[in-house]
Length: 271
Image 1: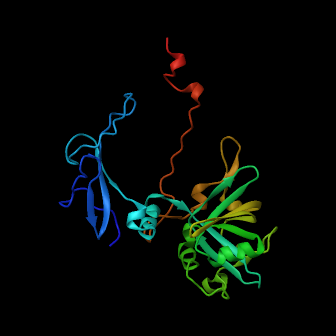
Image 2 (image 1 turned 180 degrees about the horizontal axis):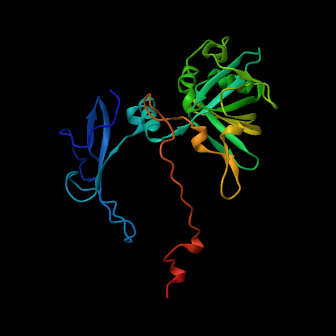
Image 3 (image 1 turned 120 degrees about the vertical axis):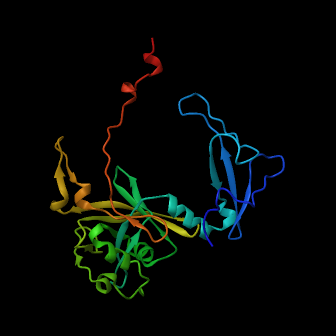
């Protein structure tokens, strides 16, 4: 059984003299239960007081999990349940023998602004990684809500000699600057050249310089400030959560960041 131990557990016992750790057994894996007391934000103090009895005192309960104790495989499930939502890089590559590959990667983000770079992480040595390292090129396509089942299907472990474009029924569209094709059904494609690859444990981070972006005109909207940009409600991107869960965009919040010069109650503005 994999998961986080319940906070209230008859098997809790404090480590002698520490007043800190409580060992809980769940599915044979030890977890740590911490009771954290703290003051209200802004009151000028923060008490990291862990009570001798986790059910006494103010504050709230936290369950601590040690990756070295529970194992990296089980801790991976915790990470992907809390690092959410994660955007999806729908990565198109072409092998050295000319087979087009397409796979979703949910460890994905922007790496650099100038020059523009994006990155995805391959857990293990998958076809996407092998092809990028061999050819130095890839395309990141936007995974959209309407393509949910197709995006998921491209995550199937097809043999390397088979193309996901063919097996899933997607249309390859020629790219402008690289050999791997775009997904014609996707509204956005970022054509990339390999800039760096970094091996970290069992995973490899792939960083690509964006050479060209192709965006469907239908998803672009001009705002009140005259910026013509892809609109989130027209893109309808998918994101990955924990377990086998995915998410759609949901409610969109809009707020302007406050410059420090306008921050209310600044010390240098007090009389």
